[in-house]
Amino acid sequence: MNASHRPDVPGLVISLILFAFAGLIWWDTTNVQIASAYGPGPTAMPYIVGAGMLLIAVGNLVLALRGDFPARDSLDWKPILLILGGMAVLIALISYGGGLIPATGILFAAVSAAFGRRAFVTDLIIGLVLGLLIYVLFSKLLALSLPMGPIERLI
Image (cartoon, rainbow, N blue to C red):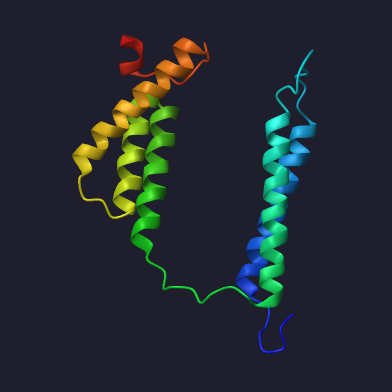
């Protein structure tokens, strides 16, 4: 630790949260009952994500203990609320039968607005097209079951 720098308390809290999430991912993955007869199986990717999160937590902890984080900007709640609102709409639409495609379109437009883009209708159309491509790729080509709504039933 630098003599002139004190530990960064918010950085320590974030690293503890990252450690907790990494541990949760690893613990949850050990409880997966699906085994693969060949290859890495369905548990490989969660272990990789957990290991990556663990590395990020360690790096964050080291920086926090040294006090090497740069000064933080002031917090702007508007982008955070736009993204959280988009996520809430995504969850609500999927939960109540609205479907994946419109949920993805609205989330895309909300995140674009959060990053400062002001073409909401254009972003909504782009998001709907991306949602359609995702739905077709995963549902039709990979035969995975995705949340269906009125639009998805037409496809």
